[in-house]
Image 1 (cartoon, each protein chain N blue to C red):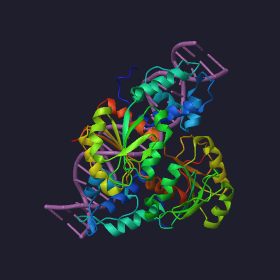
Image 2 (cartoon, each protein chain N blue to C red):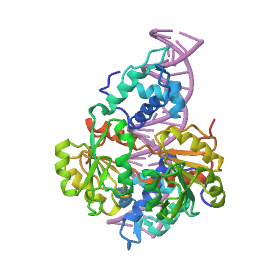
Image 3 (cartoon, protein in one colour):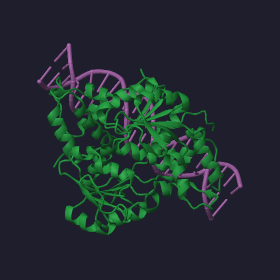
Image 4 (cartoon, each protein chain N blue to C red):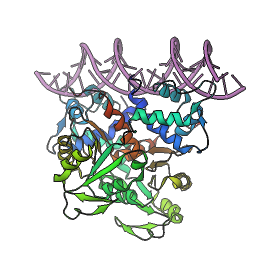
Amino acid sequence: MKNNTNIPPATVQRLPLYLQCLDQIDTNSVGISSKKIAEIAKVNDAQVRRDLSYLGTLGTRGVGYDVITLRKQLELELGLVDGLSAIIIGIGNLGSALAEYGGFKEKGFKIVGLFDEDPKKLNKQIAGLTVNPISKMKDVCEKYNVAIGIIATPEEVAEEIADKLVDCGIKSILNFAPAMLKNKPGIQIRSVDLSQELQILSYYLDRKPLKVSE
Amino acid sequence: MKNNTNIPPATVQRLPLYLQCLDQIDTNSVGISSKKIAEIAKVNDAQVRRDLSYLGTLGTRGVGYDVITLRKQLELELGLVDGLSAIIIGIGNLGSALAEYGGFKEKGFKIVGLFDEDPKKLNKQIAGLTVNPISKMKDVCEKYNVAIGIIATPEEVAEEIADKLVDCGIKSILNFAPAMLKNKPGIQIRSVDLSQELQILSYYLDRKPLKVSE
DNA sequence: GAGTGTGAAAACATTCACAGCT
DNA sequence: AGCTGTGAATGTTTTCACACTC
């Protein structure tokens, strides 16, 4: 294991961003500076150094960070090395899109089950997986030791599905339904509401941007 | 307090959440308290009051907030009343899902164009719209005075598409491609990276959750 | 009594600026 | 010279607590 210093939430949010930066730089650069990362991630360079310093002493003064070490450390800290399993519930357009989304596999996640209640969707093949009824969820969760449930159902059933996920022993939920899930003790929930993102953009349309580009 | 005041970014992020809360409560309640909103949105009630106070003096002491007034004010502040137009670029699984996603319309956004370069996708009909080649983007943007461009393309072409959007006079970009777009002066960019969301969840899996539910 | 609006305090996050290492 | 790691300074956000209104 690692440095058990608690990493501030604001920093945790940015760690995946830094990982993404490493994928973005050209593959034969062996080292990278906080200045370069900051430029790609569009944050302040002191911020990058402070954030990375929570993971330990990774850089070399006067030189920078070694790309391979840095990636390893980021993956370790985020817990990506264990190859976490996830399932998707609700195989409509969005659920299908998520099932076929390459980015999950690339970052070490494995989608091991697709579930839907709609008889028209049952037994459909998507991304090499068969759509199963919700009743089979528990079996799959136990078999694959599934850590994360991804909800892509309509709003109306999201809460019910969330409860079932908890029942299946799942510890984290990524919710794409525009529903406000109730708190479940000991369960981490993140919600991504697509229309909320547009609304935030909408706010900044009328008026001056916060930071004038400089 | 007047609404000349610049609303803090952290508050702007939560305004759509509060709007969503209003949809969640039962339809015949005419008033709502900060405590109730806080409970649904899972934030502190003082936070709700402070946030809403930036929009003006909306509540009544001893009583609470009138649901209709509050919704109107939130929509006004977020700029949702004008019925903003958006286009989607990249009509793969995710782009199609977004095109058919009901939540946009519900919140006052109108998708007025779908674009893709792939000949196999051209002229497909999705959600009542025809998929057009990128070359037609400028025409559509001018015709409908499009404010927002939604990028759902593969990573490789995202930057190029973003530049084209700016060229079409678009002022805001919602980016779903796992690419780090360069800054464009005067343009608001928000990126939603699906796998980053999973990575953040992954971090909180190993260790104690930040806030133990209480 | 119930519930807002808001100063003041506390907590958290960002940025500066520089000592110290390569 | 170039770049990290980090105290100290600054800025932002959250929360408390209570005067005030209905």
